[in-house]
Amino acid sequence: MIAAVAVAVLAIPAAAWFAQQRLIFFPQPVVSTAHLPPRAAPFAVTAADGTQLRGWIVPGSASPAQTIVYFGGNAEEVSWTLADARFPGEWSRVAFNYRGYGESEGTPGERALLADGLAIHDTVAAHDNVDRTRIVVFGRSLGTAVAAHVAAHRPVAGVVLVSPYDSIAAVGSHHYPWLPVSLLLRHRFEATRDARRASAAMLAIVASSDSIIPNERSRALYDAWAGPKRWLVVDEADHNTLGATREFWEGVAQFLAEVQRR
Image (cartoon, rainbow, N blue to C red; front, side):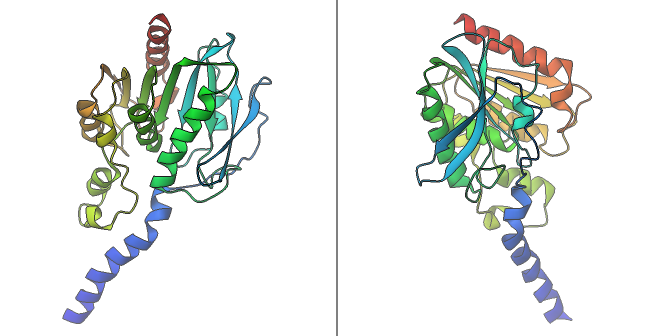
């Protein structure tokens, strides 16, 4: 009996160790691009290790245009967000699917995604129709750590973080308090380290009833942010319904308008 318990105690953490890639990353294919606006154009980035990342640019009405660079959630194929007509039309918007997502090559992982974020920023900033002084990085859920990393290492005009978190380890410990998450986790995404270095203005948008990322984890990241910041709570919203609300888009539009005026 004691031996059986010991095996179970060891087996559960071992299973969590080997399963964590599938628990964190949910690669999605490109099913269709018919929903993208006609002006959307394919855009590719070669990562530092030669991996090809593929996405799109939707040009804004200005040239060169202020530009949103979007980093999606862990189960997101980003063309659907790029197609959202609620983004201000004067802004260009760019997004790439993570490694292993959509038509991007490779396998996702923390180090790779953070490095890819910098490569994406640098490629976008060099684009002829992008105003490199007016780039806003926009992260959602998993992508908030990537956006924070870019903001800590590159000059950006602003940052929008939707359902941010301080670290995957802290979020994991909330959901699996019976597991030694901090010891098991390979992909930690310690976003607070980058938040302490980020000087750009930041808007954090959180759902009042987020069942995936608790508000206290979002608040910990917010409190660590070194630059000017604003906290927006959308009532009666959950993790996956936050972006469908009027309050969400009003907050985004107001923040982007402020960036334009600077």
